[in-house]
Image 1 (cartoon, rainbow, N blue to C red):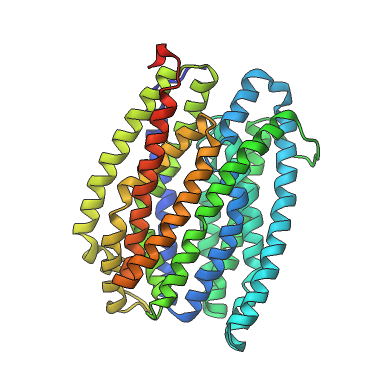
Image 2 (cartoon, rainbow, N blue to C red):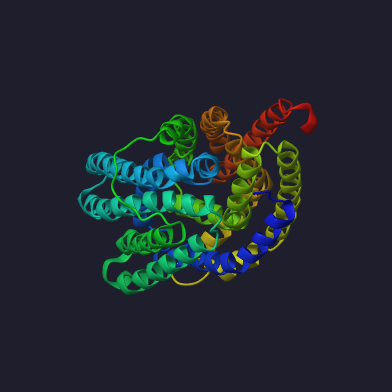
Length: 439
């Protein structure tokens, strides 16, 4: 199945309107959080709790999100299609078991930490978040795997449709519950939204991939291969997930009331363009690159990589400049309403400027990671995750001491530049190992 760069472009253009609509709905969520809940102490508790559970969830979700699972499923479909259904069932079963186990462990750890860290009222609030966040982790993990199956089969439209249904349910539940239970409505609505999205992708895999799901504890050879490679990718990605937790802890050390929430809001705004990139170009690019690697068409791999890197870097660099020039009126339009006050918006504007310094290298880093996944350079991605955590910790300590909360944002941008350079040099060395005909 020969793929060309033009076909990738056509698919991305078809996905773009759907993803714009979906990402627009999802972008409303942090705005609603700011309008309805502001940057209160309870919001800081929520973001810290959410960071803990998403950190654990990264053990599973990062194994499937634009990862080595795509080239492995692609190779299996091309060489041994009769074993594909068993592979999917086995992975679904082990994902379910692992998600439940990890959710229970982090739930117990969170409960113990909350009892030591918070006063009685805050502890009661934090403890009630554990169950909905556990369910959110479970549903998200299963959905991530099934989306990978759909992307490997080139069914790119179905995942955003499922996400759209989930987002609508999330928003509806949030609106209905916020007046009664306050900030606690956020994790409950998120869990219900993920459940709806999961049910949709389960139906899609059964119908469009001809793979009805069933419980199976068999371990086919392809699954063993995936487990070995995914270990490195998951380890690297999980180490990277420490960064938001460290950033939130550093924000607390600045003694800025609601600083953790302000940092999260500004960071979310800065990375909105890359969320669209991850939803359109990157899944399509990875599955197409996997096809080329399976057919040993290395010349096309290099061609698609260089063109994608050029487009992403230039596009995001220009866009970051535009957002910077418009940051104050943009943030005032988006956030200056409800319980969010002008001082908080002005602080976000300062943070946004520092976050934008890392927008272009972050996009480049995302593209490079997908290329390495297609080439099954999984050990390299583990090294990248370790480098990310060390760099973030070092820069946080240096920058927070000098610039306070703004230093956390600057450190985040610095991490993206370091990782982009590291992955770029590593990819250049990998390309030099291609056959001479592809040089």
